[in-house]
Image 1 (tube, rainbow, N blue to C red):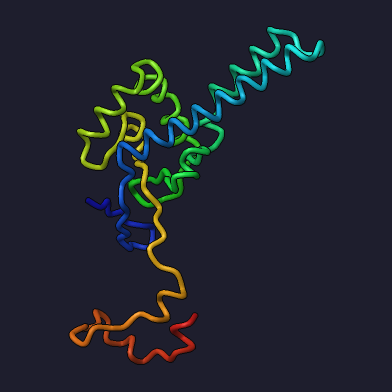
Image 2: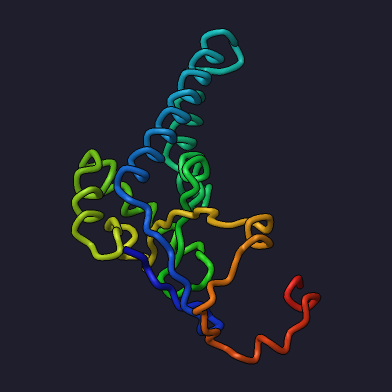
Length: 177
């Protein structure tokens, strides 16, 4: 199942939505990262007299709470698994989209231990959690299907009919560009 997103230039682009397993994997990577920060902060606090326990706790709380908001939909887990948050209308992800997703994350992931998020991802047609539904976004899987080396050796089938016959007027130099 692909998600078709119409860009500002009126071009439909098909993306593969990130599945539940990929999204859970990204969340686990983020939790491991945040757990490492947690351990590091308390280790530094116990080794140094500069940090006070309340100061460390406040810094740690701010980091843990704002992690997903600050990274603007590109957390370490999403980067590792090649996932990205996109708007369904094709426009660039805005501050307000990220803020809405972040606020509703407290409900559908934090408060319900992820159960609400998993249910809404399974039920929704575009695999969206509550934060995605409210913000008009979804998470896609960015896969790199082809690279330039594979394109240069691509054989065109004999039965292929070009959608735009004017392409035959382009030179090899035009095609390379």
